[in-house]
Length: 192
Image (cartoon, rainbow, N blue to C red; front, top):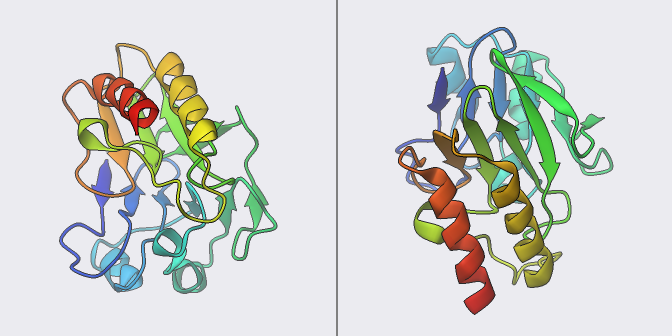
């Protein structure tokens, strides 16, 4: 089961997805809300935190979540503050009951990862792409439009027609033809 624990939060935050199952994981922690309290209310037995990238809106609650649940954080770059373990490109990580391939997708930030499970038909896209063909900002430090386009193209080629759900770093999840939204994001990134 996948739940956005930041849903309805009115502060500046990313989405934060609780993926429950064999290995209960929080994908990004969000910021500026009581993630620990929300997880406690859900009686979540957290095993790990997995990060799409380390922008502050995605990791603002990282220290408090790690402390409260005694878990470690996994991300692309273990040199980033709060990241305990590195996940390599194409490495498989367990989120809930499924294996997800980590795809290094820079352009929004150098340490950006997407997580894709072909078997589950689920993608965690972070801030690479969003609903309706929107895409991640490239005007922040480490942003690079050319690399972002390459990353979107890689993602578009990787996901297949079985992609049923795309969970994004901001805004609503996409459950109707998310591959189309990825394709549209690639086109829009080239135009802008």
